[in-house]
Image 1 (tube, one colour):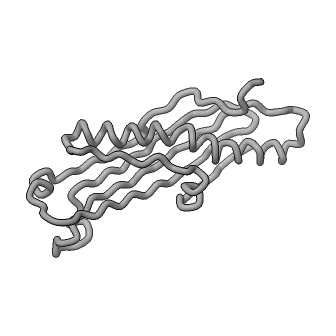
Image 2: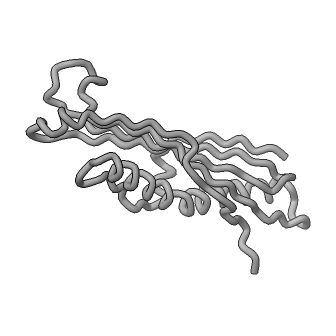
Image 3: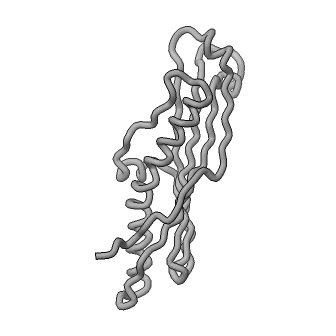
Length: 157
């Protein structure tokens, strides 16, 4: 049986990293970590291809800093990680139903396939940048992740 969706290739689309190493070394007390994940799906049913982009915004903040919110940030990471997927369309199934099945597969399975790559990129970037210990995103339940992420879907026939 052939897989309905297949990851063809993936990689980093955009990256912003900022770290105040000096302030980080001088910090005493508790730091706050904020992580947000977003997802965008674009595709074409006729071309049988889709692109999923997972966006990660990560901030490490010192709540004791008196300045504004951006001054509290010791570390900022903005990362867009994309995956290009191909998929198989069953010509005998009604188009709208098939379209919905493919979108559902991409939302759940595509995200589940791509998330470990995003997770590895975050760890690799933060380790290479000199953070010790580096950031490690937790493994996730994709069903729950989908409930808490911002998503956009743009799928053409």
